[in-house]
Length: 504
Image (cartoon, helix red, strand yellow):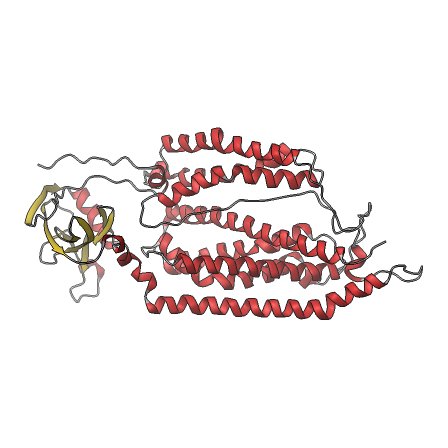
């Protein structure tokens, strides 16, 4: 008989991550070697044999932690035996684990586990099987200091081959940015600056001389009542279970005061009538919580959040995040900052001329999204492999560089498209700049379909709804963030060009 299984009390981040840890039957004492010790004896029923066989077919593996170090091992293997027909395959369940533990003085440095292929049980048929699970423990001293024990788990993503791919992608992105900046500088010197000097010299237009181009709509470009700001922050720390998600919940709640201030202050600058209603966009995190839980309770999967965790999140939302959001909104309303347009705004909007098809919203969004997506395409693959696969992602310095490049490219693309829109005498740039900036999020969501059908073995309604629902929440957040970047960059650009001319 073995001791009863004890469930570990998980932190908030572990619960959000779907971790449900229990005690293992392996007794491991410091510096005590053990050989072929019996962990437990179990008579597997037909139903249990069928479930183990299904797990072997799907390459399920064991994941354990010893001294907070991850351990992984496959539970079995499929023996093809040189035959072609799948019905003749043999499915073997491993029953002996070898633990190799490396230490330095009194600290555990590394843990490895392997299965013994000589000890297995045939579970090819649906019949009761008597299994005796065993384990062996070996201790070995090494000279690696305790501070460097985590380096082993990041080697897979920092191998020279992988780093070369990362840096090649970064250099490719930098070349894209240099080309964009070069085109923009050339355009500014040869076109925009020329227009500004021309408009500045025309202090008085004759009756038969009309304004043309982007100056023609100077009285309409600042006509809009909307604001959408999303504070996005995150901390990546892969070796502490649940630390990332806990940090995201806490940081999201703390930054509510910033979100409330920036949203309401800008909303009031544009003379919005109901600043309290403007804070209603904060329901984004509630959508993420419901997406994680809705429908998963029925299938009893660990990704479903317990009712207690949902209650805790809503308590944090209601009694901590929402008051901070409201406090920031009040501060933004009382800031009494005004929206200073660099030129006079006309009361009646001008008629927008008929534009060619490629100046429409959808073609512009496609063009605005493809360049930033090309900058982050490679990193998205590695991030997806970390989230939905078993790869450990640790190149956060490269990720930070790519993130900055993404913001820069999004801003420059938004500036260029906004100018061409104004040059066509279309003054409705507000939503256009936001939608074009955020279109990269739609490209990422499109990539989700490619990754799902070509890189994963997921199937069924449950896994599909979990994958696409989860990624919809993430891509929606990316859409809001990059849309804000595109809008803010366009606003700064338009203030500059119209502040550089004289308009009657």
